[in-house]
Image (cartoon, rainbow, N blue to C red; front, side):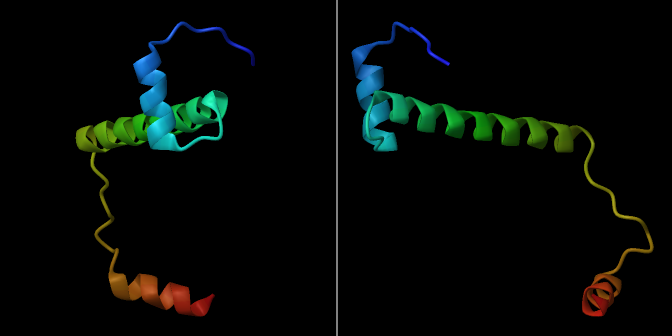
Length: 71
């Protein structure tokens, strides 16, 4: 998708510096992809904070090891 955006030069310079992209487009793709990944992790952490994982009472590490060995 082609997009026109007005961004401060110092922001673009920093993005290029930290992403080490080949050009502005590559740098912005890397920066935005990384930002999206972090945002997804943050959202998942919030979800887990509200409702933590709960293992069933029958769950044991020994049972999991035995299952792994059978495969």
